[in-house]
Amino acid sequence: MQLFLTGVTGFLGGELLVELSKRNDVDKIYCLVRAQNEAKALARIKKVFDLHNDHFDAKKVIPIVGELSDNNLADALINNPHIKDVDTIIHSAANTSFTKIYDEIVEKVNIGGTHQLLRWAKTLKHLDLFTYVGTATICGSMVKDCVVTEDMSPNLTAKHLVKYSYTKMIGELILKDYLPEDKILVVRPSIIMGDSREWAPRSYVILWALATLNHMRLLPMQTQSNIDIIPIDYATRAIIQLVFNKKRKYRVYHISSGATSITTPKKATDAIKHLFPDKPDFKFVSKGLLTSMKKWSKNSTLIDDHSPLFKHKEYLDYWMNYFGDNTKLRVLFYALEPYINFVELGQIFDNSRLLEDTTVGPSIPAHIYLKETAIHIDSINIFEGAIDS
Ligand SMILES: NC(=O)c1ccc[n+]([C@@H]2O[C@H](COP(=O)([O-])OP(=O)(O)OC[C@H]3O[C@@H](n4cnc5c(N)ncnc54)[C@H](OP(=O)(O)O)[C@@H]3O)[C@@H](O)[C@H]2O)c1
Image (tube, rainbow, N blue to C red; front, side, top):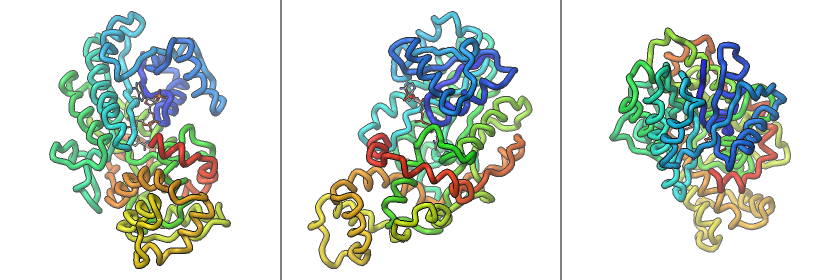
């Protein structure tokens, strides 16, 4: 098998790369990497293997320097003689930012970049499968407190909480403009957070949100909202099994916890609180209070004395003590808001197809595996993460 993989320096792509490189039925893995030159791209790939001392085979894993927002990417790939025999593509790269200021680049990378890849993929004589890593959140924000099935998306009338999920939906929709249906596989992970192998995950993407909530302790969200979370090792195993399962019955699969392994904010926070005995207890308040929190973090005098926020004064005092300055929390509240909005949707992503066509079984619930991995959240720079989120 001659594979082409994008997003290898990221959370999911890195795991996919390492696991795929261990397989004897994979001959080559060409990796699209952003870098100034091939040597620097190779160094970035090597780092992916070094993280957990995995064996790196330079004959098997080969960098292809490229940038998804480059309008000439398709031509560059078409003109590269080394990748003419690629038969399997896994497109995991995306700009995953939720913050509005990145909307333009998110669109360019996730839609424009997918067009570029597909234009090249269409020219491949031996192409067997194009796997698009989408997201289950493309179902949008009108679908609340229910089990979402694969067939409910894509829906062009869906309302999106962030540009990111909209662009992932469009990216999925354009696949069939280039390729026949039998060459397309869409995997839609729910929320991938942490790692169930009790080691530091290769990226703190998403785990950043848990780290921030852990510092805040006063949480403007429902205790019992359903959150569909899976660990990275499970997501990786599931995707690889689907790519290699020639008898899979569907074109689209949720990679999710489903109802059996669902978690809630209460269960997740209960699971990690023993690791941080010096912090105040977690306290859940209505989401409406986030507006007051944002105002307070801009200027504490903007909040009148009767604001319900002052009922939780011990947390405001804790924040002042811990962060030293109310304005520091502003960036956290704003960055966290889309995550809280997603949690409040209470969506469970049906995993029956995944269980039917793989042997991965149900995922470990987040409140079980986070008991161990959450030890790593203390080292996350939450302010840096807020800017990148
Ligand atoms: N994590 C989740 O919870 C989750 C849930 C559902 C779906 N997904 C999907 O899973 C996939 C992987 O997500 P992730 O969590 O692994 O994200 P990630 O850690 O942010 O990694 C993103 C990857 O995409 C690459 N990339 C970004 N912009 C690029 C560009 N302009 N040109 C080339 N490469 C670019 C990044 O390269 P650099 O290192 O150069 O930035 C990185 O390798 C995405 O398609 C995402 O939509 C993720």
